[in-house]
Length: 291
Ligand code: NAP
Image (cartoon, rainbow, N blue to C red; front, side, top):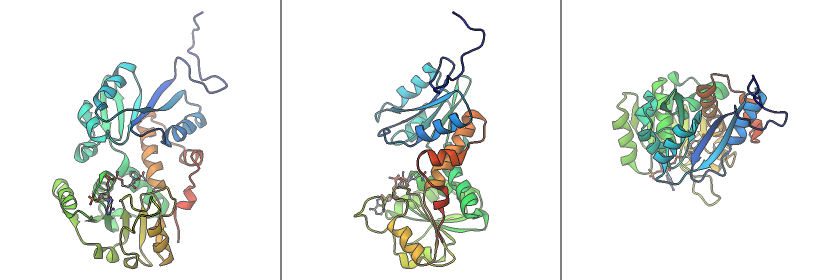
């Protein structure tokens, strides 16, 4: 039997024939917090959308993008190891995704797939909202030169911060400075941490119990802020040491949420319910700042 009106989400919030599907591709991806976070937001706003995790092997990014086209999937989050390959597989890139050569979000404009990168914007929004830090007045040191660091460096520099990049492998830091070619981005040594207003820890050091500290905590003290992009554990040893020395600290929860919130906005045009999204995955936004 045909119904005149399309079916809406039923009382158990199960998908129907009209449900819009969004997904994350990655490998590994079964650990991803995104489905729980986004589906909580859709349910709260009573939206007929569903978000799923799709494991996609290295080398299959282009096939996955073809699948998105064929299946009329409404939007895509992209995680490791596909961010660069998806940038090459979509039809257009936002200016930021083009500069980073990496995509973490795909949106549709009809048949056209557009690659975006929300990581840097998410980071800047989180430090503005949670920490009251205005990048245009800040002297920042970013420790690390991987994908997350690149997104944060570009967003901070475009927001007017003075950014020094410090990395174990100096060549990688120099490559970022040369590629981004902005007057307010330079390389530096670890000692520059002591003069920074904001220090961003963008290496994986601190995720494992036996990791060494990413830098000497004696370089940090009162009047400074350390944001560690790691959020598992909620407080890394370097963040603990910085807090003990009087610095303000925050973890990567803010960036995680705000970059997801930006993806939500891009796909749906609605404002994301960030506290609902955080609570759904057991993240406490109020824990994101420390004295
Ligand atoms: P990545 O591309 O693999 O980059 C890793 C960076 O860490 C490189 O600069 C690397 O230095 C440095 N590094 C790795 N091991 C090191 C060691 N033993 N000693 C010194 N430096 C070391 O990683 P990524 O994707 O940028 O991610 C970095 C961190 O950010 C991860 O912890 C990730 O979980 C976190 N992250 C958080 C969010 C969020 O939303 N909060 C988003 C993305 C990533 P070399 O150049 O010398 O190898």
